[in-house]
Length: 139
Image 1: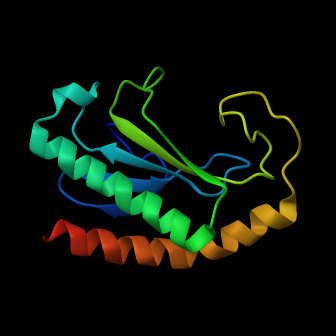
Image 2 (image 1 turned 90 degrees about the vertical axis):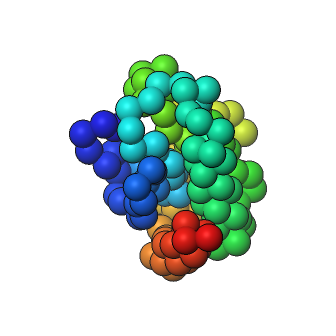
């Protein structure tokens, strides 16, 4: 995550970027990635923590507004990638792992038609995200 965007870039400012991750079975899996290499949340200054969490909030709100998921999961693990990033994942009761975490074993196959329906909504969601993040960043 230091050298590359880490997915499809949705938005970037001087401090962070929002990407859509390529996670099979989870079409609305986003990450808010801090641009500078920082391993832990507490390494950020208070103002930077606020900036980061505001971006996470904007992403969560956009997922809820555009996709009406069953739940939005938010996590910051960093066990495999010690670079600060937040996962913001729209979850649906039909997804392959629900209600378990996306990192658990699959419980069923996700219905292709429902995944495709979510995929079709992503361009509008991401346009909205870009607009909201740009407005928020200039405040």
